[in-house]
Length: 279
Image 1 (cartoon, rainbow, N blue to C red):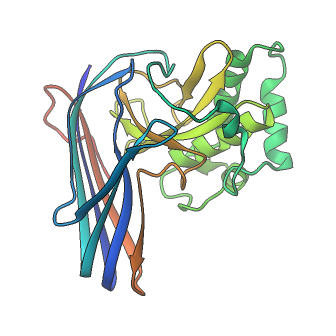
Image 2 (image 1 turned 120 degrees about the vertical axis):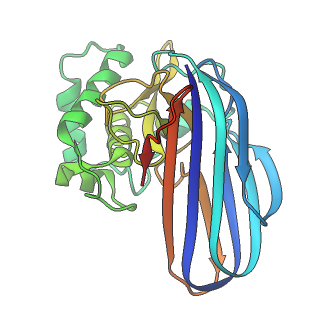
Image 3 (image 1 turned 90 degrees about the horizontal axis):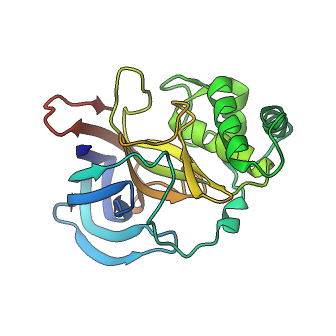
């Protein structure tokens, strides 16, 4: 499948800021499931700084811009050819050992409720069958947390999302990561894009899912929001320990200003002309 992507992020400040510095992981990597045919990240007048591939295999680019600055826009456009690999991440070169992703953060910290759901979901799965257990955990998150846009905040934790019983794709991913940790399965947060269809959810902006490290297969993606493994509709951008660490754009500003973000995303199959999502 050939997908065309346009992703526009506009940062606005309620007072001019003196300087802005951002770290971008906005360029996907070639893997067995995706081949980058064309890709461009436009940061306008910003100065381009260091660029490198980090230990997780994700391309990182720094940008900076001097003010006074009231708005800043990042426009990403590209074309990607995708193939369904049943969620298995093949051909992605990285150096971070899977065991590093047994580390919990504030957003994925385990509670008694999370441990209980993990134990309930794992009941009946055979020892050593980590793939079966991973699928069971994904289904459990899908059933326990309803997809409700606007029901959580950017800083909502896995525990809070489970307690509330609703959330968005980043909440589903973080709850799944927590359940995997309860079962001693390495897990990480993944940011990317999803071409929306009639029966899919979570494509209002950049999408998120989790990857669990499965014996014999390596990293396998699980999208608990849609109760499936990523297929040819998905484009993988970058990963991290949680939604904050795995964000495609992170940054700091010099100035006492409140920041707001407007994001629009369109993921189109080759030949389509209608926008798929905006947020």
